[in-house]
Image (cartoon, rainbow, N blue to C red):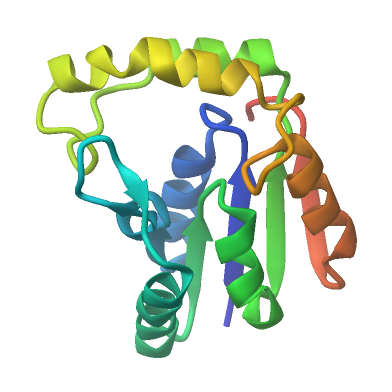
Length: 159
């Protein structure tokens, strides 16, 4: 049974890697973006307790899984169950390039145009990765990586 966490900056390739692992290894896939935000305008973070319940529902329903996201606070909730982690620690410039080139994500946006309207905000967000001090930051991700006792891999370029 594989139970894998994939994390890193926005645009680092988390979804691409998680989808590949899901397909190649037959793992159920959970994108934390799907449960971390309320459907409000502007979007607001969902309560941690509500997220935990949804994560537990997912992990209870699947023997093997891959969970991906940039939310260290949510990853910590399931880290004791994980058998392996991947930290996508790409240079910020590469994350920005990836974000500019990403295909439409219909599970997140109702149209390509809606996704593109969010691009400037996303690029600004990505650029501040190394300077933020929150659960989405490079420092939080590095601490999570360093504290994980199991198998771990840090990727510093797209594969």
